[in-house]
Image 1 (cartoon, rainbow over the protein chains, first blue to last red):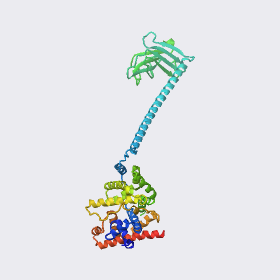
Image 2 (image 1 turned 90 degrees about the vertical axis):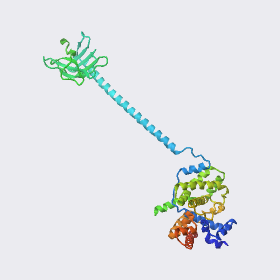
Image 3 (image 1 turned 120 degrees about the vertical axis):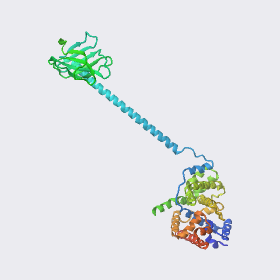
Image 4 (image 1 turned 180 degrees about the vertical axis):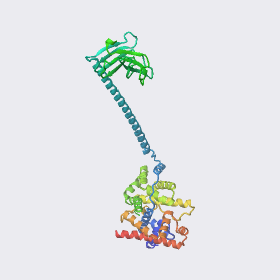
Length: 250
Length: 205
């Protein structure tokens, strides 16, 4: 057969559908390098390759590439992305936890320092007031408890600024108990006036400021008893400190 | 319709690249013949997806398709020494191997007789070259897509049965319940339509 007689059989041959005798004829032409048949077969194969392109696009799994390369002896284990992402994630998580913890620590430190500063400011103010009272021109000093083992101390009194009680050797207040300060009226039979609670330090020393004017004509003395830490309206325990406002009253 | 066209273009891209990358493929063949594993990796990166799509269309099982893709690349790797890089383009050759592997599989799985015609894979490497000559490959792809759509349903069916399932005309006749002569007529008519459409486009360009 000549090439023109094979014209309609090249695609059939490429598809595997050519029949005898055309199939053997085409094969023989190709084997001897027939230019016409080679050209026609290239065209037929191109056409069929394009037919193959009508398949629905699909993607194989990522493992396939590794499988294929491994089958020719290429080890692709190397440096995978999964461990990298896992490592980075763990690092970021650790960093987040670390900085969150540090931030929490810093916040707590700031709160502690702020509270301490506030307490120191309050204490300083109190001391300033105490020194102002002690240095006041009209301030008198009463010493109490000198003849008793406990407690003892001094009361600074200023009519316009108030009074400052400094005591030592105070008995340690048990849990739930505190010292309550009383203003003792001059009027006989009048009940003591409660003036707040305070605690001593671990050595039994306390400083209690009673700010504001105190009229010595109506108030005779300052007294201290140990009461429940919520305070009571009238003394329920023995008097620990009794300090007259003026030394003459002692 | 638009999505289908985009999918068609996406899938054809590797084929178009295959047509246009003959020079790069020739260098790749030389490296494959030197047994450079990285060359096989590059070959897979170029043609792995299109080979998989083609095989999956034939066998319709993802796991089997991957096995056959692996066989395809190993076959190319093992037979590349006999491939003339100056005459043949490795991409179309690989796709022919892929199609043959897939059709061989469904034949053996379905206990069908092997087609008496074994498709040449490397006997004539020059059959896989110069595919980029003439009109632009993208135009060809578009033309063939249009041509496939022009086919009558039974004409398109016989082409797909022959290409994707490797059925002989006798098998197609049995499958479709049609006389053998009718199937042969449909096959020839369909191929002529496709050939004429591509030929007409080539002439117009």
